[in-house]
Image 1 (tube, rainbow, N blue to C red):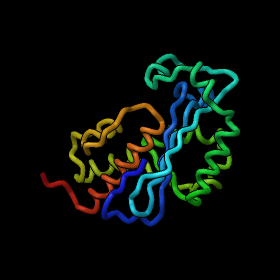
Image 2: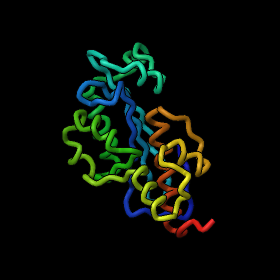
Image 3: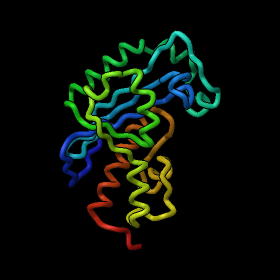
Image 4: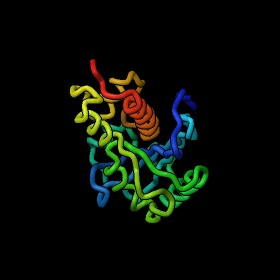
Length: 193
């Protein structure tokens, strides 16, 4: 998987990451999947990784599984213990260096990542990019049209990005593509149409 975005030069790569969970509360509900891609200096999206996390018990909200479409029996058979997933994320990050993370509504994802990776700040930079917050700012600044909205599905639709929601890898990829489009908007100036 590789998409080249012409005429984009970033100062450092960014790892875009997304999680799927068994609910909204990181203290009660399990982290189920982690998806990540790397947005390179040249705007190339590469290095997709999709990890499944196995738990001894799954305290899940039925609505969460309905949204993600995750079958817990299939999930458990394909999943790895949390320690192995954490090691895989550390190895993934080491392949790029200690760079920023990016995500959409990323505070949610961080709530589930921190217990998995207590050394998160040593693995990644402490700052991160949040496309939801960036889009909100650009709407208020008049760069994005007011009617667009900030859910990932609305942003991908606005930018003409193909997107099938609620798969961690698909969400991470779509978020990276939205970020590239938001960067292009800033370079092009406010929307006057």
